[in-house]
Length: 157
Image 1 (cartoon, rainbow, N blue to C red):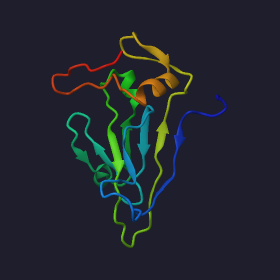
Image 2 (tube, helix red, strand yellow; image 1 turned 90 degrees about the vertical axis):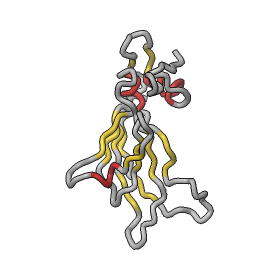
Image 3 (cartoon, helix red, strand yellow; image 1 turned 180 degrees about the horizontal axis):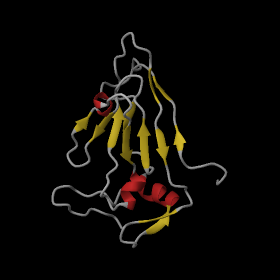
Image 4 (tube, rainbow, N blue to C red; image 1 turned 90 degrees about the horizontal axis):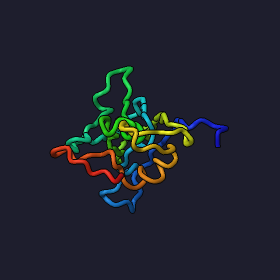
């Protein structure tokens, strides 16, 4: 388990929408990344959609990049470590009609804590391994997320 680092870079090629795909489907369904940070260089053509954690507003992040800029956002582990002060944005890649362009290619880097690393919430009340955080909470509930209306705590601790 400790022979390899926890962080990973993925090289993705988005295919065309399958003929039988539902209109509401997407190349990458809506999700939040599990790690500490995600760093994404501009893809071969913009498609990444982020949703503002507070409002749910859609942001076409890649469309607003200047030359040399990359997209950087928090993951669920960092959101836990900051008690939700930094939110992991939900994001997706919709099917995009590429026309004569080549297939969309992307190469995000995911900075992750080691599975055996101990993580604590800001109060110090919750301490667990990163593996436990991902398996028990990130894949199901996310107690560090709060309702934005009145900042009502909806945690499950």
